Length: 129
Length: 348
Image (cartoon, rainbow over all chains, first blue to last red; front, side, top):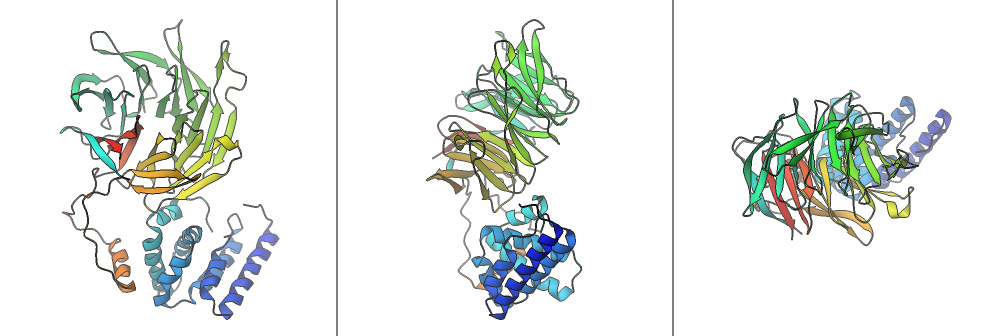
């Protein structure tokens, strides 16, 4: 992981956000999610990480409930683990309960695809997005 | 590939086994039932029979057991001591003293493959490497390495010149521990390879083909082929179940990992890449539910998070976490578990 300065992290996360919004406008929600989960800001200052998390949440909310399972199938192993870490991060943020409930659907689909190992990695992997 | 059960040890008064060791010729089994005493079993007509030997020199829980190729048993304990036991001509097990100089509990132990020295991983963030000192008639320790947290795993290189240590500071370090005639060799104690694993290291193993494998608490197994030098890439295999507690190579390209999932899992190296081959103990066949839509599998996933009903049939040989694993020749290995059993398996 590169050691970036705060400005470099901010710029990187903003670039990321722009790319994701672009893809969402073009209705490519699966690609948008993959882009949002790519290269998480491990090691960045907390407020930069929060911006990165907002981008992921924005990408997640573009899916209807029926599409969620298919979307998790398309993600590769690394992104599945990153998404699981983000889910737990969102739940710690006191979001409205309707959002929380939607996240549970993602959690169930992810556990089916990636197994309980992905939850273990949220707890024990020291890299936190 | 599956593994078949060769031998099973179950005693009514042994409720859990926190560590065990079987000698390389499979003749003797030593185990600790999460207490201060060590029980010795001997192989009699293909089953392990309890002998009268109860090794009771430790004053706290025994945390590590290992047999050397000369049939000496090493035991280490949380009471900061270690003993080397040898069987006398009259069948009694006699301990030799070890000057461990440990300030904290000993967590793991391993004999070098040539049987001349042994290493003890300590909670005081270093490793004690012990050799036999003729003049004082006991084993004396040299300290190796300085980690930032307790040493929880040890593995010797087959040449007995290098020692790999894994620690809860999330690093795995291989030290040069070669000795010359005068004492410690020129590079003694220098770290040769350092890997940051990102999570506590639960176990390490060296294969005969120079591959270093280590497993972490984040349910991954990582492989590094030292043939390609100290900067070789680390292959990270994520396991979909719970973390592994112990590893053992049962061949150059086969690794068995066991842990909180109650079953041993096999990893194979195919075309240079390591991958999960599968669980080695599938248990009784579970009737599969018919093909369902998205809704059905979502419900099944939710069931996982509800408390399971009692009376669920055990579907694996071990009914609790596997705590330690010892490899032998010919694709055989043994596992001990918190359900109080020790099982010897053979890969088919």
